Image 1 (tube, one colour):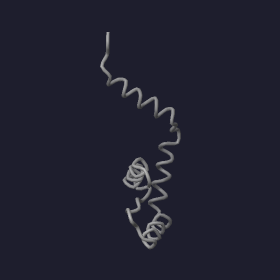
Image 2: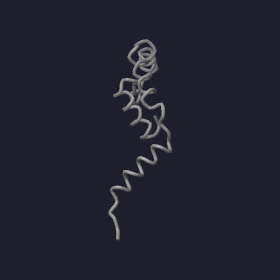
Image 3: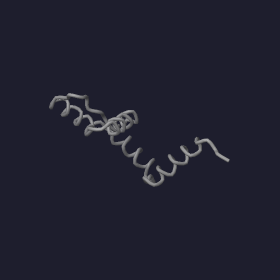
Image 4: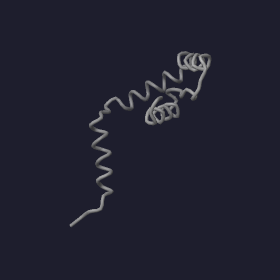
Amino acid sequence: PHYNEQYLAGLRLQAYGAGLVVPGRASTAEYAGLLTRLLTEPVFRQQAQAFARRYAGHTREGTARTVFGILESELPRTA
């Protein structure tokens, strides 16, 4: 990942069991090993499918509404 958000999203997917994060300066062999695991170990497919079902109705707009609602609820109220 080139940006912090991509790295953090990758860590979340890895923690969920649906992916792997490539170490910083991975070799070609390390990439190949990780790809082999992703393609051959059924748990990654199963977890990716579970993730897709869980977030099937996800939209950017819905996320924005939720985040802004939380932020606005934390703002001090003025008279």
